[in-house]
Amino acid sequence: MGEKFEISEVTIAEPMDHEVLVDIRASGLCHSDITVAEQGMGVPMPVVLGHEIAGVVTAVGSAVSRIRVGDHVVAAALQPCGQCRACLKGRLWACSKPGALDRDPGAAPRLRDGKGALGQLQGLGGFAEQALIHENQLVAIDPAMPFEQASLIGCAVASGAGSVFNVARVQPGQSVAVFGCGGVGLNAIQAAVLAGATSVIGVDIQPEKLGLAKKFGATEVVDSSQVDVVQAIGELTESEGVDHAFVMVGVPAVAESALGVLGHDGTVYLIGGMSPGTELTLRPSPGDSLLLPYQQGVRGSWLGSSNFYNDIPLYVDLYLKGRLNLDDLVSNTIALDEINEAYEALEGGGVARSVITFPAPS
Image (cartoon, rainbow, N blue to C red; front, top):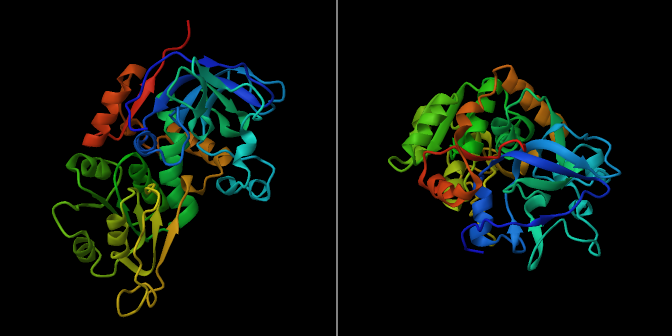
C-alpha cells in the first residue's frame, strides 16, 4: 500500500467450475484503483488491481453455461452469487454472498507469484494480459463493439449512467447537477440528457473537464474553484435549486455543497468513494437547513444499482447506434508499463480515462 504499481510475471491457474479465462484487450484506469493502491480501503495486499475489462474468452471451466470460448465480454465490478434473495430479484449490487464466487480456501489460488497468492480486486484483476473471472461477473457483447470503449462500460458507464437511470430515475424536464466531471460524471451528464433533463449543470475545478462536460451535453458548467458553487447554481436555477445532485468525488465538503443546491424534494446521490471513517455533516433542523421542510434526501449509489446482465448490452446498443458517447471518454491508450505515468496524468486533470490496450495474441 502506498507504493507505485509493480509490473511482473505471475502465474494464472486453469479455469475451474464456473471460471472463465479472458484474454484482456482493454483495461480502463479508474480512480478507485489508485485510491485502493494509496489507502488500502480494507483490500488485502498484494493485489492485482484493475476492474474495467473487455476481452475475448479463451477457456472456460466445466460448469460454465452462459459464456463460450470466443465470446467478446465485458466484466462488471460486482460479484453476485446469483442465488440469494437480492440476486434473484435482479438487485445484483445488494448480493448478500459476494464471497461465494471466490475459490474455496483450500483450493489453489487463481493468481500467484514466487511469494504466494495474489488477490484480485473485486474478483477481477484487470491490469494484466489475462484474467480468471467467475462467469457471473461477465457479459457477452456484440463483437462490433470496440474493446477500448467496451472496457469502460463495466464501471464508469454503469456507475454514472446507472445512477441517473436506475437510482435517481431522472424524468424529462427535471434539473441535474453533477459534481466531478471525470469518467463517471461525464456518463451521468450524458445519461441525464438522454433521460430528458432540461438543465444539466457540470461542476468541477478543472477547465478541461468542464469543457468535456459541455461536449457531453451539460447545459451549464461551474468552476467551483472560482465561484461559490451554491450561489452560482442558485442563480442558474433562479433560486429553485436542482432535483438531483450527483457527487462523484469522495470529499465531504463537496457533498455538503451538493446539499446546498437542492430544491424541493431534491436528493443528493453519493457515488465517489470516501475514505474509511469519513463523516458527512447533516443539519436537518429547519432553522439550520431546508432538509426537512423541503423533503430533501441523501442516498448512496453503488455501481449505479446496475443489473449488468441487462444494462451492459443496453449501453453497447446505445453506443453502436450513436446515442452514447464513449469515444471521447478514451483520452488515450497506453501500454501496461506506462500505468504509473498515466495515473499521474489522471490526477493532474484533463484526462477522462486512459485505457491499457493489449494486442491480440498471435
